[in-house]
Image 1 (tube, rainbow, N blue to C red):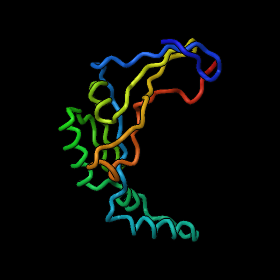
Image 2: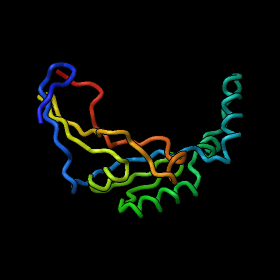
Image 3: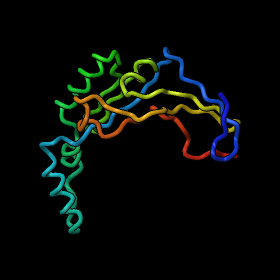
Length: 151
């Protein structure tokens, strides 16, 4: 299907083939048990006092291992593969075929191609299953649309 983007460029839109393997990333919330300490640290910084040592600050910002477990269980049930877990940065990298991601997030993954390049994005409103609501704060990598093009 062809259409025009906002700059008048011809665009081709195709649904991503169901078996296409896609890697994406979930960013998890800060550990709930650490929230009071994080708020106190923010107040301390705003008051101009020195920050916590790096090792302590990193520990405050890590994901709760229980949240990582929830993501692993939900992902495995959905047929997705855990590629990498980085608890200190609260990131979980997963992969799976496009058809499963469409079902998992309630979207349709599509590819757009223009003379300036091509990218993947999704159509529809991205949703998370109940166990992940509140645990996941960001989904990265489903869209690969560039922020800017070089002409």
